[in-house]
Length: 239
Image (cartoon, rainbow, N blue to C red; front, side, top):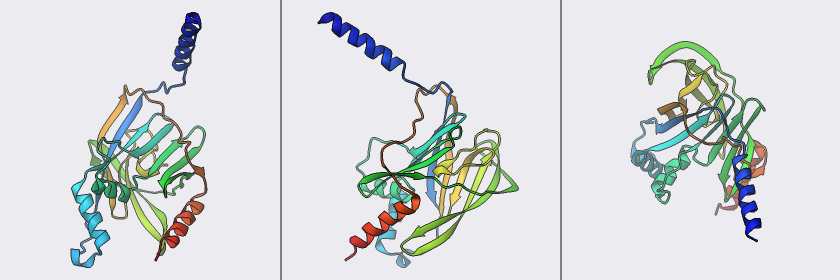
C-alpha cells in the first residue's frame, strides 16, 4: 500500500512537471481605462447614466495584456475587492465581461464573454487600419497614429464608432487592448468612441511563470448569435 502511494506521488510529480509551459518570457502591460467628458450637464442625463458617471469617477479600472511572440490574452485585472457595486458598474462599462485571446501561429483570434449568467465564445473581429505619419511620445516610446472603424449594434440600431490607436514599432508585436490587433507595433493607447485605454505600466521580458491559454469555457456561437441572445433576453425582461 505504501509502495503504491509512493508510486502515485512520483507519477503525479512527473505529470505536473511535464505540463507544457510557455518557455518564452512573458510581457505584461497594464492598461488604465478612462472616459472622455462628453460635456453633458447632469440634468441632461438619465439616472442610469449618472450612476455610470459616478462609478467611473470613483474607480480606477485596469486591464492586463499578457503576451509573448505569438500569443496574447487581454482581460480585466483581478482584484481582491469584487463586491463593490460601483466598481462592478465601471468594469462593465469598459468591457470587463470580455476576455480576448489571440494565437498568430494558429491564426486563432477569439473573444470570451461572461453574460446573461453564462459564458460564450465567438470569433473576434478583424480590423482594416489606416496608418498615418502623425507621431507622439507615449511612456518614452515613439508612437504612430492609426485609425479604423468599429461597427456597433445595440437596441437603437447599427452605428459606426471611430477608433484611434497609438502604436509603437519599438515593441515588436501586433497586439493591443480590447482585442485590437494587426498594427506593426504594440498599441500603447486606444480611443474607442469616448473611452480611452492607455498603458499605465509596461513590463517586458518578465519572469512571470504562466501559460497563456485559450479560453475554453462557454457556448461557441457567432458574434451575431451572441447579439441576438442579448436582444431576446432584453425583450423578455421588458415590462
